Image 1 (cartoon, helix red, strand yellow):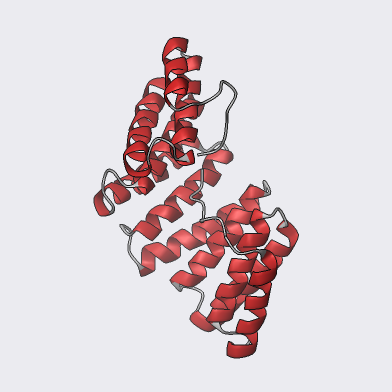
Image 2 (spheres, one colour):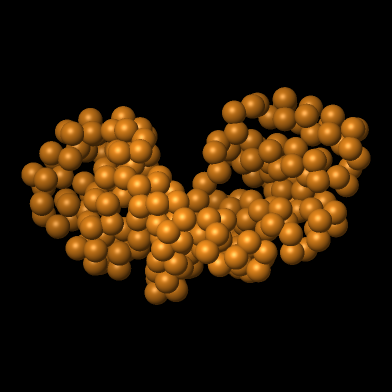
Length: 238
């Protein structure tokens, strides 16, 4: 899965008012206005209003490109936001070049071993996986994991996300032994850093129990679900 932004907490109306206020204060072409438009777009996307979200993401991108340049990290973030929207809509052909461009900017501007670069690697890897390019996706996920282990540490929740991505990919490839190893590692990190009751911990436990079921290890799968108070049919994305 792509790295997801934190779900916006303000409602769309409040964010729209803020965007209007920024435009009046700073002008329609100011980066602050772009940031407010981006926040509004994220809220609209979370609400399922993809059409309007796309319009505001695109407007924010145009502002960042004009005000900061086409190779600025904030421009890369705007590209990734728009790409995430396309991916959510299933338009992988539109998402991929935007993620590729964002990755190239981060590598050039903040370096190939920066956490932002790791996020861009995960995002592009997710699109490649969705397109069936599993070997290419695996290489990007592994690069992202190496960066986060080195920079953020082996017990950081962002490192657990890399483990989760690799686990899903190995499961899709039919390599359940490696899948379980990464599920187990990601679950350990999330429980340690977020707690056993965190939705992020529970959803990874559910994914691991599914892999155990596939292997016929049903008692282990059932024990895992009991430990995390999961039902047999709980499912979600990690």
